[in-house]
Image 1 (cartoon, helix red, strand yellow):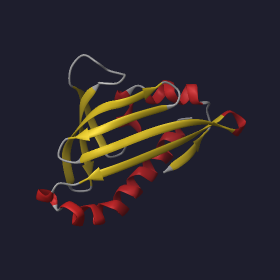
Image 2 (cartoon, helix red, strand yellow):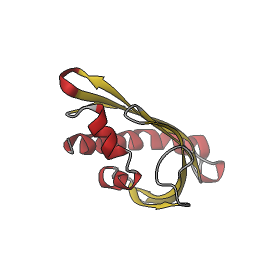
Image 3 (cartoon, rainbow, N blue to C red):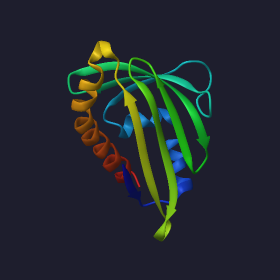
Image 4 (cartoon, rainbow, N blue to C red):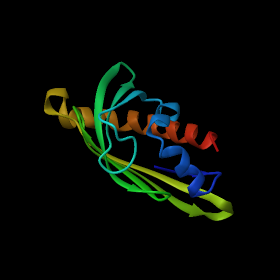
Length: 138
């Protein structure tokens, strides 16, 4: 998913690099707890209490890519596994094209591919809303 933000990439990055701030614009992220002293950069690990409708879980994540002003990648290593990535590209008018990709795998104990099939449209709606809320901050 992608959206245009009314700020240059450096300004957007200054906001999203603060992982703690993600709970302010990600409606599915309830609380973030860092695992260790790192708060930024590759190797930062944290738990994110996640809630989508009645489903609640703790998502364990690790930053795998950190390119200031350009990209942030994360690996999900908890109950749900996979990878996500934000990219920021300069757009016309001093704006930023912000793109969010996710590839998640649900464990067989939680329905595996059947859960993924039903979760996909729900998560799309949640992530669209997240991007609208992020855009409203600029």
